[in-house]
Amino acid sequence: MRGKKYKIRRGLIIGLANRDGVWAYGEYAPFPPHTEKTLLSFVDGMEILLRERVVDIPLEINSVEDLAETLRAMPDDTFLRFALESALWQLKSREENRDPRLFLADKFLKGFSLNALITELNSHGNQPDAKQLSSAASVYKIKVGQGDLDEEIRHVQKLCHTLPVHKKLRLDANRNWSFEQAEYFLSHMNPDKIEYIEEPLKFQQSLEKLYLYTGIPYAYDETLHNRDFKIPRKRVGLAALIIKPALVGNMARIKKLARAGVEARKKIVFTSAFESGLGLSAIACMASAWGSPATAMGLGTFAFFSQDTLQPPFSAQNMVWQWQEALWARQQLNSAVMVRIK
Image 1 (tube, rainbow, N blue to C red):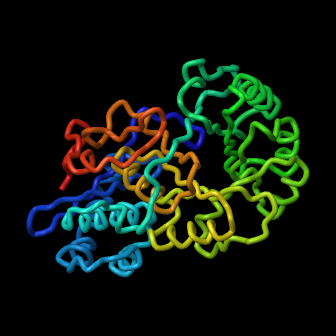
Image 2: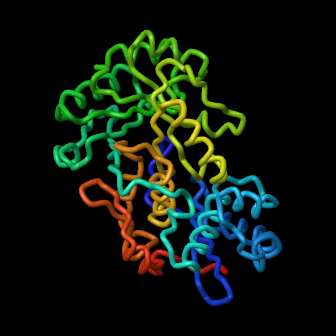
């Protein structure tokens, strides 16, 4: 995560219940570093606000726009908004005993594939093992721009050569390169093996030029976190919008952004910020409602957790997620991984 390794993912689960004892939950998991002490301090500060502005309000919400209005007075924290909106929308769905995706859209995908995440590509020459590459995934994502440029080129070239013909790579540079570095790297890549590269440049003005020089499409990720961003309809080389709900903002904005992307004929890819199964389940519903058909979503991070916040845990069969109503109805929190604070 951001160039550092973590063995433990810490966060908060916020629970909301109605007067009949129906519960629903949302995940608040900002990026580390943070500690149990800082999370507890956050809870103490937020409890009064939650009780004043969320608790005991009538649950008159019928759309994501209603959610935005209900939580209008809450602090401008995208991770918190993701947690609260997830809990409120799930609570509404459980009260009415209906598919939570119907709150988001009238029609949705029955399921979708997931991309696999490759984490080991470093200066020591470590390569993903054969088992990892022979998984059911057809798309693999890997971070670049984190080490020596020539070494990364060699590693990715070897990876492209190792991958079966029908499998492709998604690269993510997190805005780490100058134009010259990005051009140098991408000019050594086979465009047929690269689906797109996310945010390769420190300065976004030259993305079209980079595509014209290299033939490799790019995708917006961090750019979408800017609330004033509007999708350019004629942006050459733009292949996809990478939506991380916990970083983009409220669900009304996410829905609007996804619809604008579809109108501009761009792929809409929902991806995680290393949430546990609770957060992933919410994102999967959004991807089902607003994501692009026949497109791998970035929710394969569930495989990195030895234990999940849910029982049964979030899962995908052969790297394909499908909605299972019976599973949703009986999922509970996993008490083995949680400490009750309030």
